[in-house]
Amino acid sequence: MSHLALLLKFIIGGVVVAGTTVLTEQIDPRYGGILATAPIITTMALIFVYTEAGTTLTRDLALNSFYFIIPTALFLAALALLMNKASFAASLGGAYAVWLISLLIINRILGVL
Image (cartoon, rainbow, N blue to C red; front, side):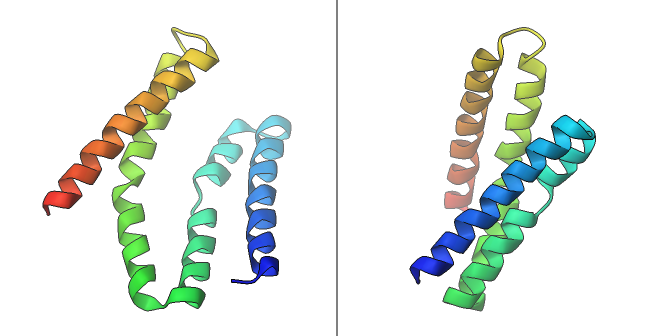
């Protein structure tokens, strides 16, 4: 992979993060949430993997992304619930703990299948 392609990936990712932040702060958190959860980054990753590695690896990435979205959903739910009772830092730490545990569980389940 060329350095220019890698730089492009970083720039696109940064634009999405910055856009999500601006949209949330300036317009509406609902729209920021839509952008944050939109499959933009996933689509870019799928395109880059497809152009660099082909169909099989891209299909595997899509399938594994589907399975591992579950820990991400649990992370977001835990963060929202914990922020009612704890500081942001503590809530984030707890949410990451939930994410890591659920990630390990999903990974273990997939290893068995």
